[in-house]
Structures are given as structure tokens and as C-alpha cells.
Length: 149
Image: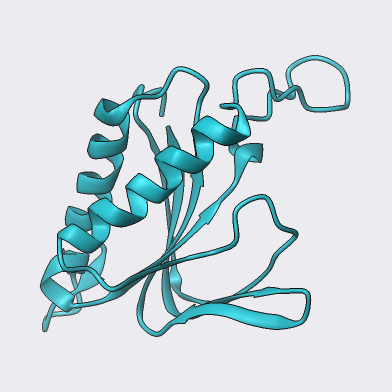
């Protein structure tokens, strides 16, 4: 499982001209599910995001987590995080999970964050989405459950 985590002042998702979700301060998470991901990878990434110390404390140092600040999460499914561009000019998505598997894990991921009392919203799975954000910092963190980076 891979995630691109962006600290945001606000973020929203619009599908077919209709706003389907939005948050104020917190994180925007682009989540990619690999074909062999299980609950183990899901829990690792969810816990990592909930506890990442990427928010500033009273001294201006990144020392606080999403749990400590009461921030929200907006989670957008993005299979393209598993695009392999090492050969040719068109990405291969062979390592991305099939949609039915990815959707199940995506929904479970959102539920895990909610269980940790993080206000969490999602995009629309498999939809063409317009994602808007005001990046705070900017702060962008890459996570991989296989710890490849």
C-alpha cells in the first residue's frame, strides 16, 4: 500500500460538478492499493498517518500528529501510485489491486481512521474527480507499507 500524504489547510473532491467531500485543516491522502495488500498493510499505513508528527507545535516545530491536533483526513483512492514507468512511455499498472479488492481496502482504511476518532471523508471510488487543496507548508510525505522509500 502506498500513500501520498499532504498537510492541508483545506481540501475537497468534486465529481461531475458536485462537491462530494471536503475538509478543513488536516491531511489529504492519496491511497494506492497493491494487488497483494492485506489488512496488515492497511493497518500499518492508517496508524502511520494518524501518528505522523507533521503539524507544528507552539514553537513552530513539526511535533504534533493528526490525533493531537484534531485535524481531518480526506482520502482519495489513486491506483496510479502503482504505475511502473521503468519501461517505455506508458505506465504499467500490473501491481495495482483489482478494483473490487482495492475498493474494499479503501473503505476499510477510511473506517480505521474514523475508529481513531479522526474526522474522515473519502472521494468517489473509480470516478473522475477534481481534487482541490490548499497545501500547508507545503508538507508532502510518501509512505509505502513495504518500506521501499
